[in-house]
Image 1 (spheres, rainbow, N blue to C red):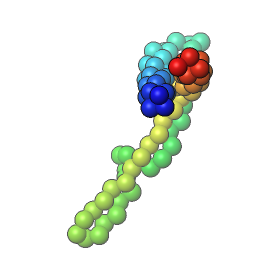
Image 2: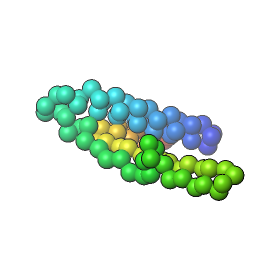
Image 3: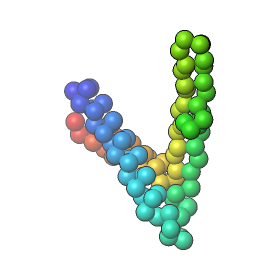
Image 4: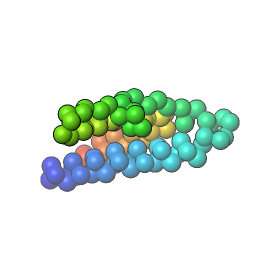
Length: 89
């Protein structure tokens, strides 16, 4: 039962992130809704990764996390939907 709840939570969170991205892209050119697409990116840039050169092997490290307002709103909706669903399972 616990595994089922965890999978439902994971699915809802992923759906929230994906729907938030789509919503931000769709509202980017609408003047009164373009605030939904405002966001920030943090991390080590993927196009300029941090390099570790050991002369035998070269490792590149890069990780970026980008989030916008629409994704945050959709994640909150997903969490509240999970709380409603989890009480019924």
